[in-house]
Image (cartoon, rainbow, N blue to C red; front, side, top):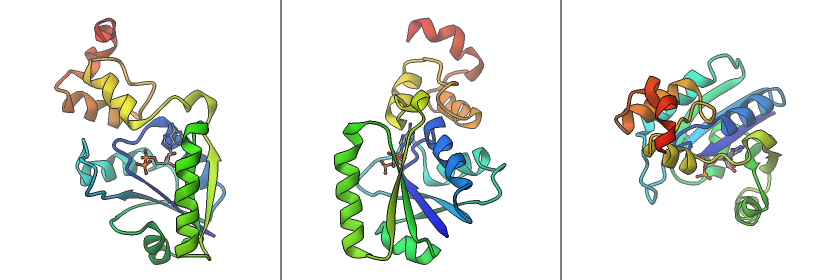
Length: 170
Ligand code: ADP
């Protein structure tokens, strides 16, 4: 069985990566796909987000990286995925995720949505929190893969190696 893990991944966090690592053992093939959402303005261009995911998942033989626009169920069909994977951090994610899962089920009854609970240690992480911390010079190295930490430092025009000593300012 193949699975599709769709998201904005703007940028990839250790929470996303934990989910990818755990589910890579569950499926024959896992496609991590970046959604090009025209209604959201992204901090990182698509090509950079794809590179961040490729780098962080290079050790996982069953993981592929892709991108799509339009409906997730259409892309699931293109990938031959029978499962759409989503992560649940807290109850607050549930309502929104359930609505999307029901919508996708009504569009493509043969595709199942599967939820994995986030690792407790990563349940506070979101791409927006990471960007907010990095913007104000906080250390994000325990929140994102090393490549993403460097990209964030560059985005906010800071020296990545200085971010820990600077964290008192954040
Ligand atoms: P979207 O914009 O589609 O919500 P995200 O990139 O924010 O995309 O998230 C993609 C998926 O990863 C969602 O299912 C989300 O619940 C899940 N996710 C986000 N943050 C975490 C985390 N810290 N741990 C595990 N899963 C997460």
